[in-house]
Length: 510
Image 1 (cartoon, rainbow, N blue to C red):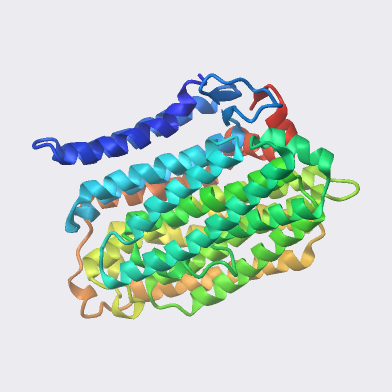
Image 2: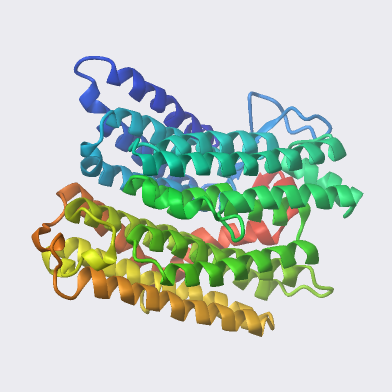
């Protein structure tokens, strides 16, 4: 079973180059789209096969897990990695299906498909990497592919947004590399389990705190946490809709939030210092992201700022869990509830924000504008898109019985049980603000009289509607099936974080 794990990275990366080769062979160019969809579908199937399996520690290249040598390139197959693989490949598959019709107006669609597979394979590598250097390498591969995808339209807006994203992303990468370098100089190791064991002996020295600060700062920039969010509001609206769905639903989770959780809980260990930083980042992102979204009339910019706010919920839950675990008498039940709520919301955000960005792409293509004031009546003229957009809006606003309601409720209850009453009130207040921003979307985009541009709008092509329906079904099913998902998907992921270094240092990782 462990032989499947490297394939999840190698298969999409290899097929990305195969797509480029096929695009230059007469008669094969038209097969690049089915190949890209098939690759991601195969990855998703392999991921579901892995969910029920116990995966031992995997060292690529035949090297053994000798803790005294920095040779083994380890790949993780634990519960947290499996959960992230499900999210990445599910959203990637739906986005590629949507792109089958959406990307026809662009030239060199095969290049989009190759870059998309490259980004997907690299993100799989990020969540499977068991050593710090390969984590950094896969972060960079995913980032480089995403820079090109943001600029794919080659208009001035796309190029400017991609350049800003490139510059700030490079700054974030420099901080991450600095942190990795400091840790290597302190421990002589790159393997996460070995680094964690060495840091346990070294303790919390100024050098360790500097490494942690550099890593958290760099990864917070990747996750677009306030105040490191400047690149996101321009990159998301400028990118093609399938890319926006991946950036918001997956990339900022895998490149930022996942890596922060893995390092804080499994490498450094939760301490009051790290907990305070995460709580501050999460609360600031929730509030400022919500306030900035409320003032937007560009639909995709509104969704972009909303992503900052919703990601804040996840970081806040991680921070409170770290604070609870760092107490003199840790309460694992409360910390576990915080982690469950955060991981559940991570999954939910990938579903409903991916759905909303794809719906915004359908609307922009059919209406020709992203401005809410130039829309209206689309719920009548674009019934499938409008219905799915409503489900996404109700989900992200936290309206029962959709998935967003349950994850937000769990986070708020966990904050109250942790005696974080101010944070509990902030989380509830941001939920109300989120509801208001999506009431505006419903009012101006889907209801009311149709404006000039929206009057002639027709429903999006079938493939685009199929993608929307799939994610809308996930939003409904995730709320109804919360308990089975907790037992088989989020529970094992939560346990990896709760067990801290134990999950990485044992012979068999769940």
